[in-house]
Image 1: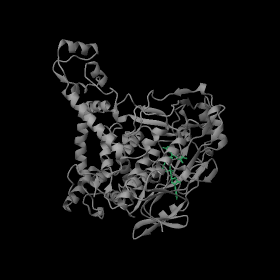
Image 2: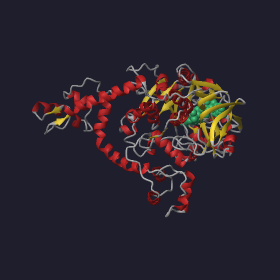
Image 3: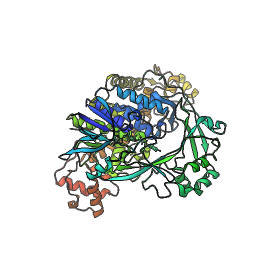
Image 4: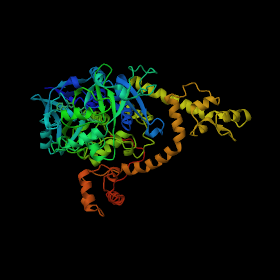
Length: 634
Ligand SMILES: Cc1cc2nc3c(=O)[nH]c(=O)nc-3n(C[C@H](O)[C@H](O)[C@H](O)COP(=O)(O)OP(=O)(O)OC[C@H]3O[C@@H](n4cnc5c(N)ncnc54)[C@H](O)[C@@H]3O)c2cc1C
């Protein structure tokens, strides 16, 4: 009989992170997938990162995960979005060679000790005394102390294009037909969601002269904090291109809208509001006479061009007709037609912040199956589920991140408390501590946690320690280097367009001025050994400029942490709490928050209700844990 510590169902972005984390933590791990050759496949757009998603990738990397490292190997265009704006909203985005991405991921996983890949369809779970203890695979029992489901878009999946319907979680893949039924039999709540993908066109059939090139940054930056040497040896970098829909395109789509699977009623699942189909865009934004489309190469040696912005479930002939109205695409040849996919997801409110089921111990869920959309959201959940699945199997404490720790914490907190009526994607606006949760400091926030649990180790852990040492040295240097208000110094200041100084001022204090950078300091005579644009300098500069704001955020954070920490007993009867409306009692009972912080963020739960709940908890003798207690619970 085969026995594992951890079984991960799925080889998508959630599954890869979960299986990698579990195995690296020492758990004997099996990754089960319908098709091992598709491990790490990019089902939709060939890009990683973007606004808020870039932060997720950096956080995964900082904890010791894979996505950032593999992305660097496959990047064919890098852009730092919002680079002219504040550091809180800057995000990295990498266009990837999709085949290389999957290949590098597979190669990396093949080298991970304790990790085995099994092929087949998981049809059910083995449950004993309220715990999940294994899976049914290819008609056999496979036992595992923890099971992580990362089934993505595959559960009872149906692909739609006009009236055409075909079973399958992704073009060329089968559907997982039985697992949903088993989950429902166990009493788990499922919901139907949908997502769509645009057509892929042949690169030689596009008239590129009618489109506008969109080059990447002149110098690409690695996603991974731990990628050396610098400069990193990226693949050759390529352009993306821009074109637009027009009135003729819109008129054609509108005329045929009844043929769209989404608008004919063939699809009942709810789609992503923030990643709408072209049909949705035209219906919802009638005042717009054109929509932007990005033509994105899917790799260095592939012919496919991904048309970002026209995901659709219209029939093939209508797709051809409307695509041919677009500048540059008049003669475009289709390699793959667009389609929508409808699938089962679970109601994530049935999970704890470790992504373990509240009802069945040993059962974890991560990725699109939890109602999210996007590779990065999937991977962010995957690493947390993988860590916890391994910790459970190996008898270690649970591991979770709060909203103050990172975007991964925000994502999981939102999912388990509010669930998702539609595929959830991350935005910077979802995080209340945006100034703290920056891309550039993800390692400072999370790498100590990654090192503590043993997921970040070896050279990466050493590099992180070196960075801390270098930062400390440089911070000491800027604080101890002074400019004195004499004529020579002030001439230099004026010469560089800076206000002159009247008192002695340290380089560190000067760095707080918006117009002063390390380049400026160097020009003023500050002895800088490092590159003025190095990550170390960038970090010291951001900390200097935003120190005041960050302190304010931290104060706020400390208050919330105290409240967040107050635990709510899992068997608490909310109906007996005085002063709560029936509606709030119902919401709390459905969600079963684990602590006061979670309760306060449930939709419809008012601050007054939270105060009543806190009084009730205090009367029961519940106390807040001391501030600063680790989120790693024993
Ligand atoms: C058509 C389409 C359009 C999309 N559009 C977008 C978009 O516009 N924007 C966006 O951000 N994201 C989009 N995505 C979503 C993106 O692909 C996912 O968010 C991401 O891949 C989810 O990762 P995951 O690991 O959760 O699941 P997936 O990448 O879907 O992987 C699921 C894995 O589970 C395995 N599996 C499932 N069930 C079983 C079973 N019973 N037994 C064994 N193995 C099983 C599969 O073989 C697969 O390896 C789209 C996906 C599709 C298919």
